[in-house]
Image (cartoon, rainbow over the protein chains, first blue to last red):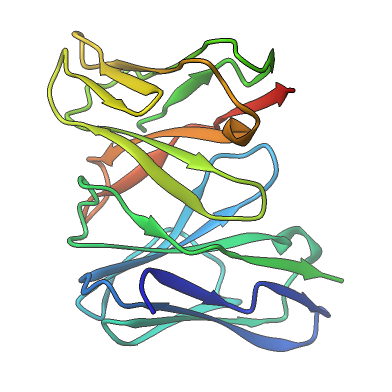
Length: 114
Length: 113
């Protein structure tokens, strides 16, 4: 399998639930990212990982917790979310953290918090 | 901070028409990227531009890196229904600690057969 794969594609969770989003890339990239996409807002960077080390946390609430166990996998652990956290969560990867040659995105996880 | 302003926000066109959209910034960019996002999918890179004045084509798509380095343009010729989607411009965010991309809000394109 090639490209960036995200699971699940859709997730509905209650505000007291704990769930995790998974991202996997088979492109040999060294950097991975989580973005949040809400309606009528630009893509918002959440986290950047370079060679499995977190290099940026863009003022994201602690109810979002990323994990990068190796250069091919990235997780986003979710707990006690709010309805306003409902959005499309996109994972991306690139050769290097600069992203100057573009990112490869996954198809996203559509999250609904009820 | 750096911001990218895209216009128009949305377009409704007839199949076969040409499309033009642009992206501007108050800051200079050394790289411009154009992405397309199909409904229910993640963005896909269409064209990358690395030099002021550069004009690059990808099939019916043509993008230009503005001479001032503060803008970029994307044109689609002879639009077809599968061109429907949201088109984003993006560029490196030099203010980020490790560098990353920032994105415009997108231009939503609708094509009427």
